[in-house]
Length: 557
Image (cartoon, rainbow, N blue to C red; front, top):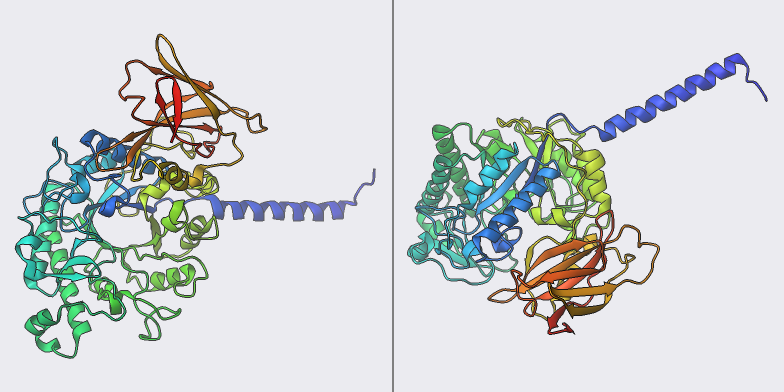
């Protein structure tokens, strides 16, 4: 054996130790989450985007869905829920001012069949886990896409002269003082009645522009424009929103100073081509010029307590490069808490458009490098059930592996005594799917594409037999190298009134058969069945054809 000279051995030892030090330092920088970090997620109720899965569900189902959603948020070590409580001049809480939401009960103004206060329920769930709850209001929207009847006693129905139809949506006019006063009154009702941590607005103030069409507030401008009329329409609109924000801020602080006021504006304040303080990039829509939301001024004047700009673009996007905009906001937040909004919906599920599978994870690593950025918020909650295995692994083992408190939270983080194992992709949870019997199977495969592995054997050759205990369904799978540790999820799809199905897991089994007892809470002849294989990592096979049972026969859908 050749023996190295002592001086060479010392040199190699030094290089080896240096390499170890570099690697360990890199690991620490990459792996260690900040000691405190805002980790938010939006739960959107408008159009039933995240919750509830459909209007008019039984209260028990609504509670179960919301509980499961918030528990999943907690297991991912997120710590702020931004819960939409007024999506369209309505309420997800019993209000003396606003009607119950169409998206909750199926008819605006109709109360839940049994008493249910979703806001109070969500607050209790979040606070019990040490998470903040921010009550999210859309201030001026009355009705989103589509048509449904407004409650006769609602503010908009009683004051149609205060509303405008634009882009197939109905809006309250921010230029009318009575409108602004009404919305402040609505929000203050929640501030007084509920133990919320913040009031939250998104990017919607004036509606997004449409080429070739003008927002129809000419009459309002002539009536209330004063010194701005007739040549400074944009300045007047911004002043209307400025007044609204400043009055609301003062109202909140006068009654309950601990409640924060936060805004999540469109990610570009102004283009650099229009304003030397603006951000670089190809000229496009801006918060200041198109939505009339001068967030820059709100921050400078101390009217808001935090800002979450929606940086819903990927790295390298010519209209809004994530890193470039993160730096701009880092340099222009006026010392206010700054968190960055991320487009989780563009990275998971059927709305996925980001080509880089780790875009969201990389963005979190990037934003942590900026001195003034204190965290992030993900849009939106329903995509958390559709994360790819790659992203979940990165979250669990690296970026979000520990629970942390928010930078400005008065509620200390609650760490469970028995730490649950890292969260895995789950088989389909209970969910309402709007589809008919001819499209339901395709919709299920599309909706849950992120947890489907086409290499996992698909159950087939289904048979049914009657036994003394009930109906027994059995099946086979084609032998495969992926057979190890397979389990089978038996799912049922119950039709609901108005169209669609409620999909839930009936049973998970290691055997290739399942018993449906004679006394079940569903009629086997009236539901659809779907059986998938699942592996030890939580991924599943594609859905085969769904089927129903008629007597002793399997009838494929």
